Image (cartoon, rainbow, N blue to C red; front, side, top):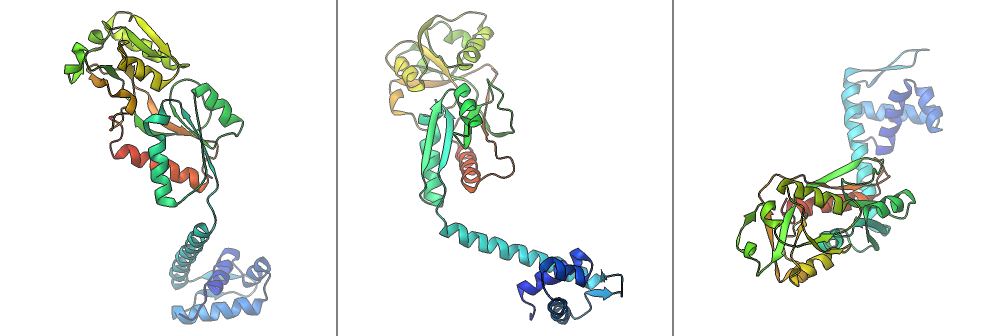
Length: 301
């Protein structure tokens, strides 16, 4: 092939402008440079690429259409190749993640560890808080992406679905319920409940007990996920949680997670950001790693 990639670009510009003079103006080149590129391209193609009509520009031939389609694919591949080389040389920009507070101990460190192993070192900031505060941080541009449940405040931008998160029970290992693989919520309501008391979360969890037609006895409240688990481990009763790690957290050594038999309302784990289709590479990579983490069975969803 005698035609250079740059000259292919000239020939594609002729097709776009539908004239040699128009392509020359667009590229700020002489018409002789454009003509030389066309001559080489036609030698490679073995036929005319353009029919030139005096005063009426050019018309692409059937052979020309095939040649230019192939040239376009080749130039796209060349751009992607150069982009990949540049990406490897340019340090990754910092990534600021916000997550609903329980997600931090459940999965975020593992996701970020796998992401760093795959793409290399970069700075990470993790904001762990309630979803109202996450919306405020996203609106102010303080975080790049938020990992949330599709409950609570409207983030007013597209959500990226990650997985469904059905509720399950957690009881002390000495509880009579701990010997079962699954229980009904009516059995759970007989125990005092340690409630994760975060905005929207406590309301959602309390509505689940409507299926038992009984109100639970709330024995303990905390706005911290780990504290609720430690309360159950200390014998404060039971709780209801959603995401289920594949490996128990250190704080749940004296507890057991148990499935609930009822088909209860379940939130979806989603991500949200303000970038739309123009997401930075780190955000794209993070979403992909989070989805891969879930597909590997990290959450019992």
